[in-house]
Image (cartoon, rainbow, N blue to C red):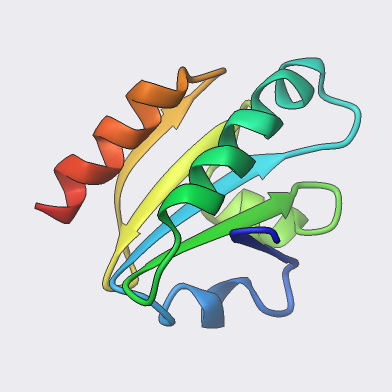
Length: 108
């Protein structure tokens, strides 16, 4: 079972309000580094997703408006939202432990 939800322009903003902390992963099917990082994101999402922590996967080709609004200039990029407001971002391929640590820091 997947621990994340795939979203598009039509439902991205509403998902930001569904949990206290939202981890939004911007990627694209043609992106080589995204293919390398995708399994790491999926593993962390499966391990940590819960009622107060939501993981979203956004293909920038299917959500160009969300990518533009949040100034995504390179992928993969992860944006962290707390109570609907962006609080942190990281770009590039991340190690599993670094992603988990970033999430735990934001959870307090």
